[in-house]
Structure formats: C-alpha cells, structure tokens
Length: 360
Image (cartoon, rainbow, N blue to C red; front, side, top):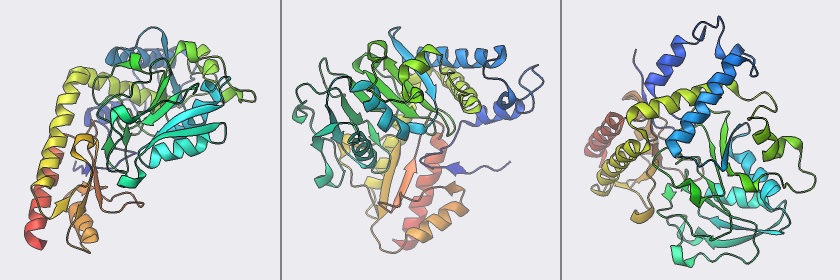
C-alpha cells in the first residue's frame, strides 16, 4: 500500500502503527463484538479505554495530582471562550500575548467577557518573532495571562515559558503538546486541539489546576463549566469516544518510542535538518527569527515568483502532500509533528533540492 507523506497542519498525520491497530480493531474491539465507536461511553469497556488513556497521558507529561485532565469537544477554539468563562472569577481583566493568528483570535473572543490587556504584540514584526522575556509585564489584578506557545500559521514558537508569578498562566499548546517534555507546574491551564500530535479532529485536551475549578462567571452554560466535566470524568455528555480511543493509542505509541524526551530529540533533529536545507539555499526562505522558529510548523517561500503552484503540483506527484501555506500568508508550510518520520523530511528536502536545480 502506497502512502504519501502528509505535511498537513491539522488534521495531521497519525502514526502508521496506530492506524494499523485501529484498522485491526475497527469491526470489533478485542472480544467486545462491536466497534469502539458503537460502544456506550458509560459501559465498562469504553470507560476502561478512557481511564487507560488518561493514565498514559498523565505518565507521559508527569502531570501532578492537583491537576485534572479533561477530554472535551469543540476543539481549541472553544477554549477561547471557556477560559475566560472559568478563570475570570471576580476579575474584570485578563492579559494576552499576541504573537500570531491564533493568539489574536483567543484575545478577541475573550473581549466578549472582559477587558483584555495586550501586554505584548509582535504584529509589527509580521509575527516573525516573540517578545523578549524581560519585556512581558503583567497587569496588576489580572485574572490570568494567556499565550499561544506555537503559532501554527506563522511558524513562530516561544523558546521560554513566561514568568507570571502567582498569576495563572494559560497556554494554547495545540501544536506542541506531546512533542517534548513539559513542566506542567508552571501552568494554571493548558489546552490543545487533538489534530496535531494527539489524535484525530473532534477532541480537545484540557489540563487544569484544581484550585481553578468551580468558579465560573455568572451565566456560564453547564457544558462550559470545567468543574462539571472534571466531576464527571469528562462524561457529563457523550464525549468524542472514537477520537478519545485513538488518542489513547497515540499515547501508547509515544511510550513505545521512549516517551517525550526521545520525541524531543527526534523532533529537534527533523526541524534542524529542514531549516538547514532552507537556510543553505538562496531559492527558499524562512523569515522567522532563528531563536523562535517552530519545531512543528516550517513555513517557507520561493524567492523566484510564480512557482508556488508548480512546486505544490510536483510535490504531490512525489507523494509529498498538504504543503500549501495557510491562505492568510501563502507560500509553503511543512508541518512535521510527531507522526512525521525523518524519512519524510529527507524526501521533502531531496525534492526541494531537485526543484531548485530545475527552476532556480
């Protein structure tokens, strides 16, 4: 069976071993006589799947006991509203760091619930950098500080964790969670859409410190209250069961790879290899400051005009797909999440080299 290398930003590639296992279990899970997607979410079989997935995620990330892990619907975009609904408490302001498209969307959504203080904004750089660590000044009495660790569209990534003291730090980690080890204790809340490094679309993972639960603003719908989901083991309503199951298979696959330290070495090597190929060419260009280049999303442009469509067409013919840059920025983008093997990156570089030889 011929499979392409999928460089899509999300939904993204899944580990081939995971797809094989899911395929083998599609019609009947073990001896259940039915597929996982047909199971009752409250039945013993699925609750065992869900419980195992949660334990594996806690092990991979070394999540402390005073945090809850939630498996919810709505994607990361739903969290743009759920965060202020649950974390504002009695405060009327929240701090936002804007470094790209997604952090700006989060800030604008929060404006519906409170006054947002934009304490750092890299718009003037064209979102090609992140603010210096010592330049981020937190507003007095703010409810929390929100930032997006990795901007999937612009390919810019924080190389440090903002120091917010006793103020809860909230992070959108949709593109980075599970790509490397993480000090969970530095954060009040982390959320991540699944369709990058966790599993298929339809699921969002929330990791929240327990003292932040249970104080939503007045009028918060029941379904948007983190406490409700925590108290019901993420099963207050029917959860996205098949996405949760597949995420669990991904967690087990990560453990077999050696965990997140091993993945960090692999991911850094992939990114370094691809950036080196771009930087050593006068034909391709990446404009992001080198200290904050994303490990996961590598945007690049061709310096010769009007070759983008030809590049994408020929890349697809070589089994290299989903390389088109986001419609808001153009160019190309190679997303090299956990499931992308080094061989895929090497194949892309070989194609890029040949394309440059022919058209450069």
